[in-house]
Length: 167
Image 1 (cartoon, rainbow, N blue to C red):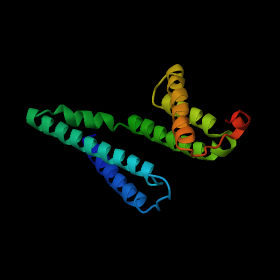
Image 2: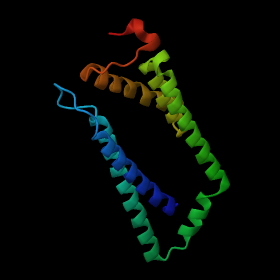
Image 3: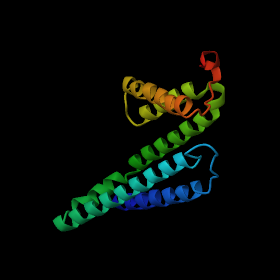
Image 4: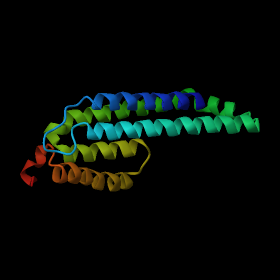
């Protein structure tokens, strides 16, 4: 597990750096103190920070295991790489990719609100939350993002089937 965490951390840092570099090439918009590069740059910074934290955590865990002479770390690595664990993780990854693809396909016909509500709820359920907690997460998160983009930043979001309720 430590080796995969090490590579994951490096991949997150590299992905963040590439996204940050690509976002810096976006043209600026006249009359706004921020441009289209703002949110990709923030996301890229988050990816790089998470990558660094994962890398540091992995290196510290390795160092502690080496100092303690802990033979159980290899045993834990073998247990986490069992076929059933790999199969479960692969299915979860495929389900997450399907949720993201479904979000992209359903955004225009259903609208941002319903699509986000469904996608966030499905993702929360996928990662182990019960239905009530998933809804308690997805409802305020959906409306918080709506408030940020639609109301505060005047970014048009598709309303889809909720167009008659649009304000």
